[in-house]
Amino acid sequence: MKRYIGIRCIDGTRRVDVVLEGRRFRVRALRPDRSLKLLEHSRDGFEWGYAGSGPAQLALAILLDYMACPQIALRFHQEFKSRFIAQLPQNRWEINGTKIRDFVAAELAKSRIRAVPEIAANCGEISTASAQSAGGGMNIFHGFGSNR
Image (tube, rainbow, N blue to C red; front, top):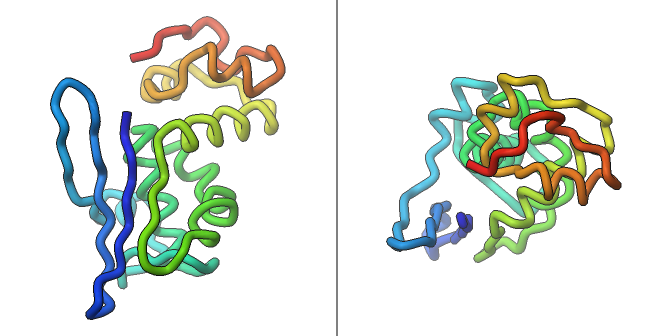
């Protein structure tokens, strides 16, 4: 499972780490580079605690990192920003992967999107079971039940 932790240092710099828990515990920095290639909201880096371009870049980066699915990250990052990133406290915060997975599954079900094979193949974090529970029984990954 992944967790995302954001810290604002005393000098005002911001850091977002990805914590990967499993057999081995690893921490790595989340960088904006990959999300900037997809859509540029803010060249100034990540920000949180309000609804602006820095928080939009962070929302896009988190969804892209967690889901490994550019289509889903692009489609839902603004709503993710509004619901999660804009509400975060300024100094330190944490978002666990379960919240991200549940958010995406609910958004997919709410928008009644059926995942196409390319999206389902790339989105290993959403299982058919979680998609069904969020969608009131609608299988948004119709025919794609692997939890990779």
